[in-house]
Image (cartoon, rainbow, N blue to C red; front, side, top):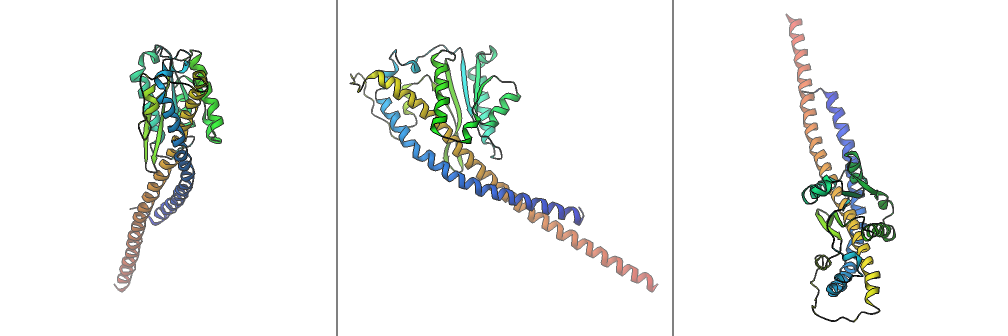
Length: 299
């Protein structure tokens, strides 16, 4: 059994750790509220735009002017990995990283062997993992979390769209954690480019009415929709994915710190019990030594 000094030092260490994890839990809870409001308020706008595009999707996807819907042989692949800049959030980052590497190996193994697959990391945890293991990473967008705004994400989306239209890449996928609630994050893998009609409708709360064989009248013009609305939809898609990941991060960290605080509380109880037992044993030993000494003097 450990002596009283060792147990006392462990108790102080655990108590200090418990204070830190409890403080981090409260900070994450406050940040989660703001991040949750952002994604919940943003989703209806994205869903409505998707519904509009899905309604005329068949007319747009097959249009030669819509460069973002062109289906090409998957020779050059870009995988966008969205993680966080900080850790201490459970399996949040590791799940996204594992899913991304697994997707690269299982679906794009040939391209990976031929060095035709690259990564774009948004979040320091993902970029550090890719860099340390020698994966080809074309861009590190971790700074976007320093000031998370639509304009900053839009610039990143424009860069990805330009790489696609200039045929630097034939296919772009995203991997991130989608926010459901504080305790649940849904690992999501979705196609970013080229755009597809089914992709425009998969996240809608209600199925839009899509009419086939209809001659649409586009106002102001079909060219405007192709050049303005579809690129804007892609920017919103990336922004929504980052907002989802950001809210999921704070939810995962809050739950992780809550569990860590509970574990520290239980450990502190066990250490208190050990301390009391050790103290009682020490007192008993001292009493026995006094009694034995007294008996020896009598003899």
